[in-house]
Amino acid sequence: MKKVNTSPISGTQELTPENQAIFNNLKTKIDEVYHRHGYLDIETPSIERTEILLAKAGGDTEKQIYKVVKTAETADESDQALRFDHTVPLARYIVEHENNLVFPFKVSQIGLNFRGERAQKGRFREFYQCDIDVIGRNNLPLAYDADVISTLLQTFKSFNLKTPVLARINNRKILTGLLEALNLTESSTDIYGIIDHAEKVPVEKTTENLTEIGISEENTKKILAFMNLHGERSFVIKNLSNLNIGNPTFLEGVAELDQTLYLLETMGLKNQIAADMKIVRGLDYYTGTVFEFILPEYKNIGSVCGGGRYENLTGYFTDQKFPGVGGSIGLTRLFYVLNEGKLLPEQPAQVLDYAIVPISENELDFAFSTAAKLRQQNYSVTVVLTDKKLGDKLTYAAKLAKNGIVIGESEVASGKLQVKDFSTGETNDLDLNA
Image (cartoon, rainbow, N blue to C red; front, side, top):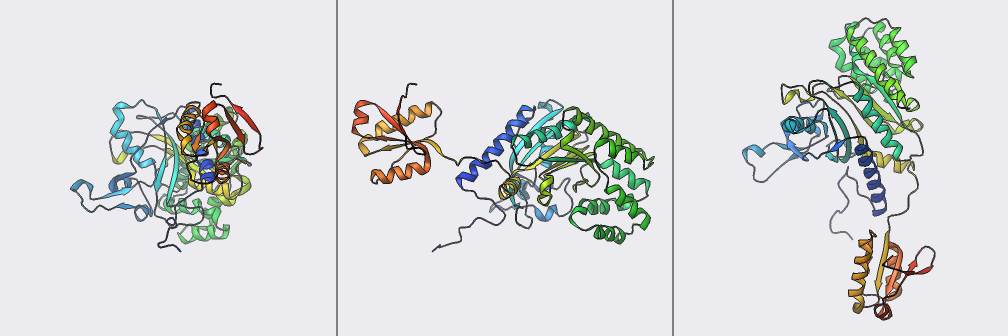
């Protein structure tokens, strides 16, 4: 009987060694793809000043951050919190280290974040996020939006999933310009929120929500028609143009969306992208391109990746302008939904290459020296040190490793070793000098 509750805190993930190996493999693949696409890795502290984290935060963020409490606080340590994402700490990092960076700065961050939201199935309070961002000084070419999206698509391709991923792409200037043209700018925050949640509720509820904030029946119909535009670049751009909206912001957004989609098509990604006016992203620091990735055959999973462009995320910290574009894979949640849905390719269980089984303490020196030689050849090796019968030691070894090496008096005397393949039962000579 347990003396205390040993279950992990709600909203945290704790894996068996086999599942941890699969998780680590995904994390390694993400890091490798990011690096191959020219993104340089950094780490920012998990703990930040609260005022930093709340600089561009909105909504319920302040309620969700975990405050850090110390028993003895100094003046400059009295208000700290755990980061809830990588983006805001990155903005601080850019300002702090701008003289040592090369712009445009392509950067990746893979690490734990913490968010005190209500824990539920597939949603975590402690979670890994894997971000890439490109930061410019004063300006940043639009082509980097396509660079970020293509890199993330290649990352998902490296997972060898059993189902394809689709990038749904939009530009927030389009909706901003539409609302300006309809004289609805004052209601823009509410409208963005309604559209952002539209796929989670029936269309009747979306209509009701727009009516409740004072949107006329005529404008509600226009917004609903706009929201339903999605598909290939040529189709969506043509229909947006047919709306005959002369607003400059709207036209700029359509042109930027067209260019971003075109660049992705030239990269051979036409079948993995779609323009979609329902994608607006909830965070208010996005100003241009926005995107979310889904698994079309499993829409109930929701977004598995998201991001967008932000023109002035560092505005709270400096007068200098550092526009950027970035995207993030929520690895902890992604692993959960992929594993639950059995969408990951079959992988062998996490096992070691060799388990060395000395029969008695007299063979320990030789066992350790053998293990050292195998490790020098990049094999994973454990030495079984339990004080049990040989049969029990071998049973234990077979649960840990692919191969077993028994070392007794004769092996020490002759220096000749044999390896047993636990999966087939075959035994072969081992040449440590090979």
